[in-house]
Length: 313
Image (cartoon, rainbow, N blue to C red; front, top):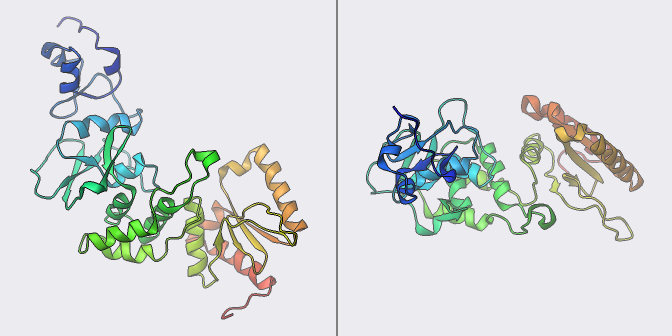
């Protein structure tokens, strides 16, 4: 077989639909060439695609199927919601179709046919996907309650404009509750009802959410989230990840970046500010989160007791 004619630059190194390639002038003969891999009916690729961004990989699977949108774990990853990522193996994409739509059986696609309203679909970089609140509800089918709380905390958190380019949450607690009320009887709905009682505005990371849940389950008072320390003169200082203002205790979760030299310097300065303000700093790292975070809870409990807290107060 002769060497294939080069594809247009836009189609090299990514999956594409036959429709878009034909519209760009690629001939049917070229689309049948053995240099292209078939990823399902109507989808071709010249090279393996695992290293490409998810949005590039999933786009043709949405475009080739009518009345479909990315959903569940795929929508969560596209929308930067914390959730389980796919394990090793061939890529599988979750898509949703309205109930009553024709059955769809394609490779690489997990199809969910269920009740779906028009206002539960949005666009992200031109890709239809479920809204954050609908994605959260769908995740209840496959996540634990704690994982669902983590995803919910991420939905309702208020981002910082200077760091993220936006200052509005992905959705509100009211939006999540509206999904629960709208889809009574849906698979996972009981888990969603349990999780929404535990979702809080203010958590900036999954680790902070999980730490908060462990603290409360350990019988300790619920801490506040990212509330600034204000001294007696009214000066606003840094914001502990979690805190007890009554007991002047700040809890800081330290991720992997805290081992970097610049971060170490900032952490030392932060500890000095805590001492100067008469506060106690409790530092938690990943090693304290093993075994149901018992070590983390013990550290927080010790600090509370030292500050005068007693169970039942």
